[in-house]
Amino acid sequence: MACDAIARLYDVDEDSVVFEKHQKTKRYDQGTVTFGARKGKLIDLDKLHESIWATRLSGGTRSGIVALEVTAIGRVVSSQHETVLQVAGCDVGFLLSPHPDAKYAHTFAKLNKVSGEKVIKLNGEIDNYRGRWPNVLRAKPQRPRRILVTGHELLLSP
Image (cartoon, rainbow, N blue to C red; front, side, top):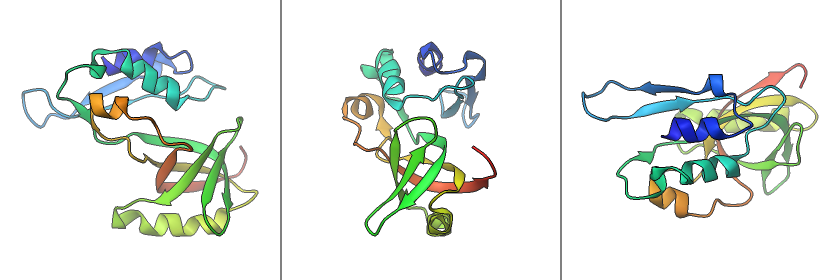
């Protein structure tokens, strides 16, 4: 169902939607849904939220989400109080924070070195987007959204 909801988004490349079931048991189990934007488009997280809400996941279900992992390209802007990723091609900005998992602690610390004019490809998880589906979908997403940084790489050109 979530795959169909994601594929209905007009900024998602329908051919990129892949569901990988983790074969931990023979019953319903965890899986990963991977998808990408159409060439020249950006995926709107609000539309994604609405599309999933439109499925049965918004009703009585025992399924949930472990993490919403994102990849974004943009420029890092740092101040004394916050670090922001300005996404290329739009006016969307994400607050950046260190991931609570200690194995990613060094990644966020390195962001100050790439702050400014350098274009980076950043990986991370959307903060507070985890739990059982009805509860996750009912909660209003925080503004601006926060990415818990898990990795980044410097790009030569946007």
